[in-house]
Picture 1 (cartoon, rainbow, N blue to C red):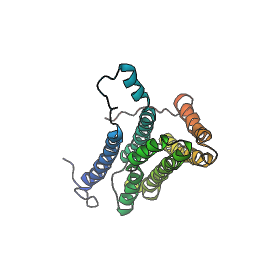
Picture 2: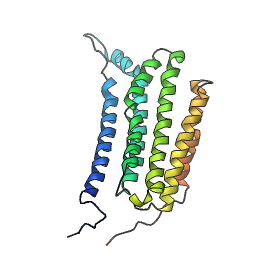
Picture 3: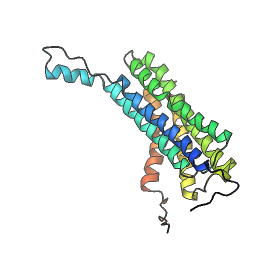
Picture 4: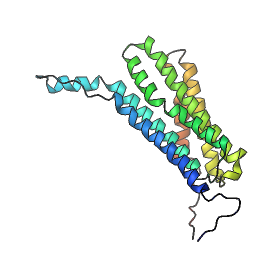
Length: 223
């Protein structure tokens, strides 16, 4: 039976798990709230299949915005999850930083619904929700990087060390994401269509890290 050392509170591990469970709940609720705007097309008596399919097609912006937001929330959750794999202790600064990572996540359902509403009003109206969505992503990336820096560098005594390759990939991906969305935001002042080229660095890095980067390390088996 493990004995608790004098410098470790008996409930320390449980308290760290509470923070992780609370955070997981926020991510799960945000993902669930994405579908609140998903109301099925109204079907009237006598509607034919082509008419119904046309109404479904008219929801393409809602479908695409929900899928896009879903992918982003899952991506941030994966970063968050990989960090908590290493955290074994905490302090007030770490709790506050963790809450900062959750703040932009709770706005994803709002920005998704706002973007969908703006898409119906034309290019002039969609620019405001589009920029708010991008700002939300920039904030999510920056807050996640700050959380990473806090637990892995400033208070590294509270975390198990992260392998060099994993640390490099973690840092680079967050920096590239934040830089890409910042580029998208800047290019949006030209046009929404042109701004989409801003995600090119993120796409290139994703392809490189998946197929060309020699980042794989041997799996360690513990006895």
